Length: 293
Length: 293
Image (cartoon, rainbow over all chains, first blue to last red; front, top):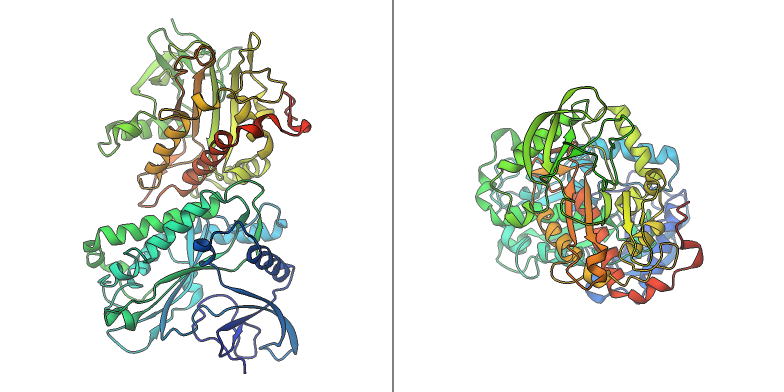
């Protein structure tokens, strides 16, 4: 029996009779093929990537496992529809904190139709994509100081300024209340260390400095960990994955400088959170709180 | 007595009664302040950079020395005009081969006027800026196999495809005729080695991964060396410099992911020329020759 994933933070969502991804109990994620060739482009990417022998294992682990496509009862009740069958990235995780970061200052590919380019360009300019080289697409943070989850409205998350994005990257690894100054008390075990998120981003960066096979437009890096494990001093299973490949194209022998630039910018901000933890609790009052507007 | 620099390969040129930079016999370069606030913005950058104690010496060496501004007889005969007084980067060089590479897939700053943004965006899309993360702005190559210099028309250089740019980066370090397949015989001594251009670009890259003080839009990396010294087995004085700061703005705590991405792309292409020299002489016939169209 397929069900609606509760830890999805961005993209189209199933529920209320809408079309969206579903999961099963065995760790699979069923993503309906998008229209306008985006779905078929994503299938093409997964098929190419999963059979590409030039992808090193330490890079492959950053991508969801691919299990082909399958006709599945769509979540909007429209009957059997083709779905990508992928790894459910949050399978087995209890209350994961998740952040979806759309990478690149440019989300459009040069050969896209003009009206699509203009729409993307406008959004890149309105959001932090242009200034930061990435923007937040969605997030959920499980707190330790209180019960429940903080899952802010996606529209307000997407249009956050560079400063607010920086603040949320601190809140993401904080143990105190969401409307307090972030204490960054989990920064070291989530972002730091030899298997932490910064290390993983640096591995990814090294690959992007070299690989010229794929250009990833409008793809996201998903960051995940389990707050409860962090609080208990256990391995919080901090992990990054790259997702959303509807706009991946042939690199034609050139590196993906757009994606790489965004990754480097994210690395710099996370490095600063790690090296200047005292900054975490000395943020100006106007930048605090859950208010994202 | 000021004179017209003969080794300038891009930008406005003096001569034929036009306004352009001049040089003297002591190693100084006089650049007329551009209109529309660009000139004053460039002065502001030079003043800030030259007094900025956070710039390490190994990075400062990549920028022209700044000697203030001075009223100088303009090259177009319009009388005394304010000029930036800078280091003449080709002073003391005999017949230098020079390449001007405009860095960044985006040459416009978000806060620029809308018509300026549209003009830049169009040019970024028409040239290799979008695909490669940089475009050639101009070049001159002194050959060893024959006398004279090859200085192709700038307009045709600017609109070169990614493939042609790649070819010119090979021709730049070749000793054979400009209309032959490039032999890349100088690649090792110009691009390679501990003081070669690749090493210098890697130093610059490391700084751009970290610095959040300045964002460089529409600036260029100039690559220079002396062909005759290369041919004689002497140190060819291969050097890079960053120039053109009319569109430099405060980084506001974020790395310059746009410039960094372009530098990484250039590094990758030059690395490939060094690691696969056999490719140099096996280029498909249509990509050969001086024909840039």
